Amino acid sequence: MDSFYHFAVSRIIPALNAGLWTSILLIIPSSLLGVAIGVSVGTARVYGPRPLVRVLEWYVSLFRGTPLVVQLYFWYFALPYVSIGGWRCILSPMWASIIGFALCSGAYQSEYIRGGLLSIKRGQLRAAQALGMTPFTTITSVVLPQAFRRALPGCGNEIIYLIKYSSLASIITVSDLTGMGRSLAKATFRNTEVFVVVGVYYLALVTVATLVLRSVEKRLELPGFEAKKD
Image (spheres, one colour):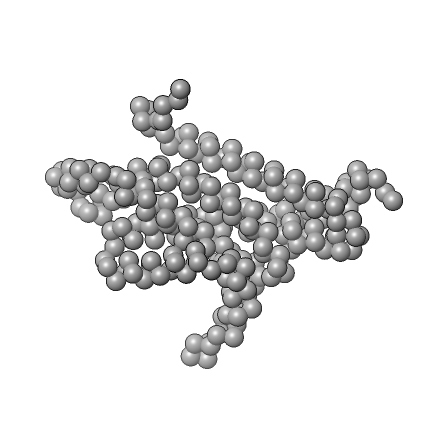
């Protein structure tokens, strides 16, 4: 039997490098869309009209209350059978994964944004209005930037989770890191070696994302408002 090193260099790493690029192309748009959805939905849930708030509460409850695996199965396997006026939507595995991850992540991130918005004192709203600012300008220029800073650790944590549960895309035939690892393991029957290296790849992705998120948090800090350290 080949040594682990030779097997990893000759078989595992080339296969996983191809899957790594697919995972990156999956994670980045899903994360960006998730943040955009989270900010929009979270803001609308706090300041939107009551009918819209009820619809968005239903959306959040639906996507937080159902397993992500079931959601992916719906977007890829079930949606093509849903006909609206004779029109059917057939998504590629990649797009089904991106949509599924973004909507699920956005539902969770909206909770962090909502909490951040509710933590802002009402006096700031009244002060902005006294200065002649419109409600929209008050929210986008005064309240939301502060709320986003407070919600950023939670939103960043959700992005970390997204990196890890992006591995579920392989169940709908996406050839990401997990998909490529699974195929190689089936072909070689060397499951331990393959999935140890797969785990290292995900650990590296999470480590890089953590460093980037910490850098973003540092850049968004306001002098004099940072948390005091002992």
